[in-house]
Image (cartoon, rainbow, N blue to C red; front, side):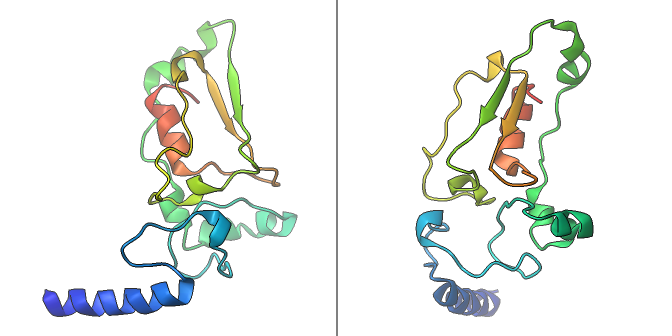
Amino acid sequence: GRRRCALFLRKSHLWSEEMGVGLSSHPPSSANFAPPFDPSKPSVPISFPIKTLEELEQRTYFDSFHFPFNRASVPLPSYAVHGWQERKRKLLVCHDMAGGYLDDKWVQGNQNDAAYTIWHWYLMDVFVYFSHNLVTLPPPCWINAAHSHGVK
């Protein structure tokens, strides 16, 4: 109980000192947090793009520590899957927020609760997360929000 918790906190504190993160806070904004990134090693789970053809060909993203955390947990409702073809007009909304993967890359949240807001999901049919990289994989928060509103 307490011994395990104290050990965890001590190890977390050591890790947080190395990474420059305080224990009592969420991950800092991406502007002031740039540790060396190795997707194969455990760390605070983040979303990230596939940047090179080699990464894509080797499928390293799927072997990364972060992959299990980057899976959406909200399924697309069946009405959105089957009724989608019936509408003649469709609206695609493309997110291009300064290259993507900023505050929304933190899978477990961050301190900026007002970072991004979409008010009119009901008008959308398709949502695209754009990041100026070879392959952009949307952070699960965007997929979950879109699926919650029947948006692909």
